[in-house]
Length: 351
Image (tube, rainbow, N blue to C red; front, side):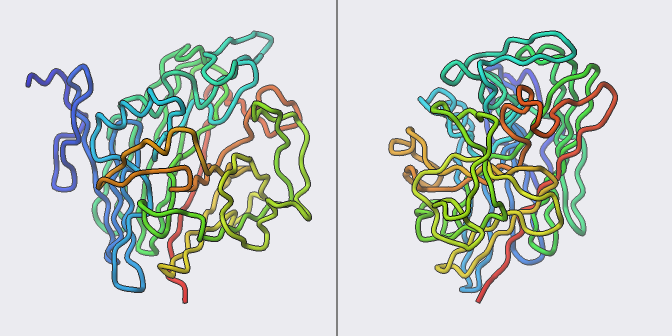
């Protein structure tokens, strides 16, 4: 096979070939591991997490994220009736933008309508479908890897040439840290998130026996297209009040308003594996998602058959449709200023 392009980094001891894009660009898979036996595999297609192995107190290793074994499966997944976005980096704007339009500095922008007339997760070719470069690696201590993407001006009709750096760090405290930074040549809007589906019982199990906690007393009210109305729903006496942990619901697709502090924003618990995942972020919301209309026919890695309750997403981000809601947190990135998004998924054994 003729290789027209190679990844920025040649294969190293912690990377291997993951396949080839239609134009023969080679995609590599990189591994970060710590002294505790925790390992994460990330490919430079979409800066996507394909595997996250956690040692449990019962002496076994469990892969806690959904994914595929091959690049072709990731590529094909975007043609499903509802693309799952397994483990990917979502941008330029995570969530829905109403009527696929927004106004910035008095100018109107029309985006791709890829979700019931709305724009979802950056449009037809969001950041999860792009090839990222690897620009830095640190293998000792707390190993890390930095992926970089240059999104051209008017990419999916978003203004400004945007450079994004995403650094994954695996700490000795069993934390997977995600540090996003971005700068633009023009004023633009931005909302980046991570889209792993987690399952602490293992990626081939159901999440319904696991419990979740969310430190939120309200969530965004949405219309029938799941676009925010601009109002908020109080969670006291609501089925989705997870301030006291309760079982994962079989279907949820909601943005919870959280306080930006150093405390746990959300958590997932497995009594089967005595495992806890805590989520920390500097973002104003965590979007919780379980379900999807494509999962009953989806073959995942290691011959797992994924279904609607195979995993749960904790998408730390700004509010969907914030560009069209003046009272939502500001989503504008000014020319020359720096966007900073921080998210941590911390794994702990529980008794």
